[in-house]
Image (cartoon, rainbow, N blue to C red; front, side, top):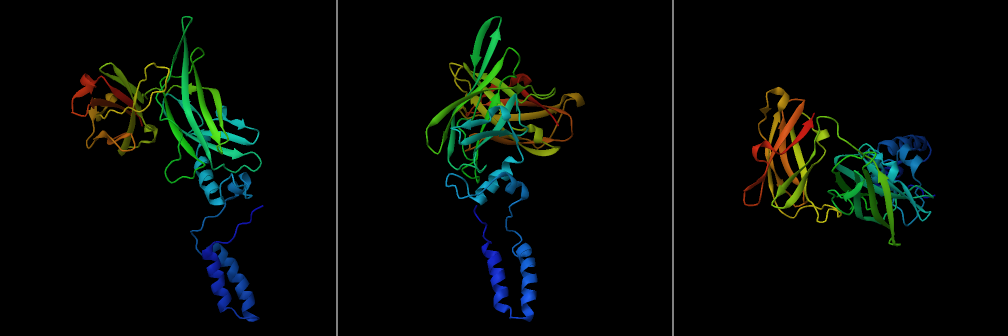
Length: 333
C-alpha cells in the first residue's frame, strides 16, 4: 500500500520549527505545534476525503492514476450519476462506467462521461479510448423495420484540464424509446492499447417533459440539419449563455450525424406565449466557435415557458431557415 508523504509546504513548516526548537522545555511545545501545523500549514493543500479513501486504493499500479489524478476524476464523477445499463467488465480485469447528469438519457442533447477502473483496486485506468459510437434507432412501422442514427459529437476525448482517465462525448437523441422503437448504443473500447473490444447495449431514452423542445431540424437545399440546444435546464432568469451544435444528417441515415462543416449565424427571438408573446432585450445571435459549437447570449426576464424563435443565415447572410416563426425551441424555466 502506497503511503502519502507530507506536502513540501508542510515539511518546510515542520523543518522551521525543528531549527528553532530546543531540547527539554521546547520538545512538548514542538509536538503540540506540529499537530496544529499539519492541519493548518498551507491550508490550500488537497486532502484525501473519506469517500475517496473508501472507494479507491492507490497501490503503485502503473496502469492506474496517481492519487492526485484519481482525486480529480473522483470529484468530477461523484457529481454525476452512472448509467448502469452501460456498465461492463472487460477481460475480467477492468470495469467500464458511463455517467450522465442524472443517470438517464433523454431526447435532445446528452453529455456522456466514461471511466475505466481496475477491478482489483477500484482506481482509474489512465490509458483507454472510446471510439466508433453508433447510436442506432430501430423502428417498427406496420410490420416494417426502419433504422436511423442521430447527431453525435464523435469519439470520446479527454475534457480540457481533466486527467487522461476521463473521457467525454455527447449524443443528441431524435426521439424517445417505446415498446416498438428501440435504441442500441454500440462503440469500441481499447484499454492500454491491448486491442479493441466492441460493446453494444440497449438503452432507454425518455421524452422531454411537456413545455420542453430542445432539438429541432431545418432544411437548406436538399440537406437536413439538426440544432441541439445544450443544457437549457440550467438556465435562470436574467442573462444566460446559450450554446448549440449544428449537425448534418448523413446519407444514408444509418451513419451517425456529425457536426456540419458549413458555417451559419443563428438569430434568436425569445418570447413568452403565455404572457402576451412579449420578448426580452439584450440577446446576442449564436455564432460558430473554434470548438465547433455555436454560442450567444439569451436574456430571460421571468420564469415560465419561453419559445425561442430561430432564424438561420448562411455565411453570406442569406436566410436559409426560420422565416415566418417556423423554427423554434421551447424552454421552461
